[in-house]
Length: 195
Image 1 (cartoon, rainbow, N blue to C red):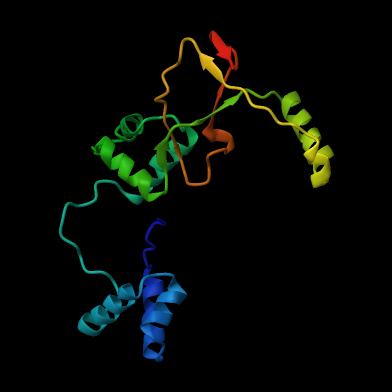
Image 2 (image 1 turned 90 degrees about the vertical axis):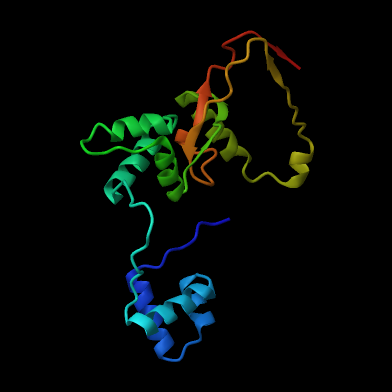
């Protein structure tokens, strides 16, 4: 489910302008990629108060500033395997900042970051990468008949001494194989059986 889009003050002003020009609420919602109910509530608020800004909401005040939220995002992207508590400790090194690990997780979720298990990949040297690039370039124009003569096989490795598989890292949707999101491991670090 895509994150909800929040309208800026500029978008709210544009929406009111379109509504006053006679554009239907549903069309305004389509132009701004929001639900029609958002535009209807905006219109009602403007008619009642004459303003497009949201009213002050009740509830607990936000404990982090926008700058601190961006600091948290930068920390998670630079050190993808840092836990929310690690990031919290770095943030609390600044004076007058007390937050929980859950708050850090919530802020990172707002940026589209989720803690997920990393893809395991073998360590590739520059020579490995160059050889793979050359192979792909050489075979990029192969036809279906040529590929029909190739047999791909697969094998599974079962570790005799498995490592703890609960390592998590921060990444956005679609970053599964991104450069910093793959946990590189030595391929034959512990005893294993190939099947």
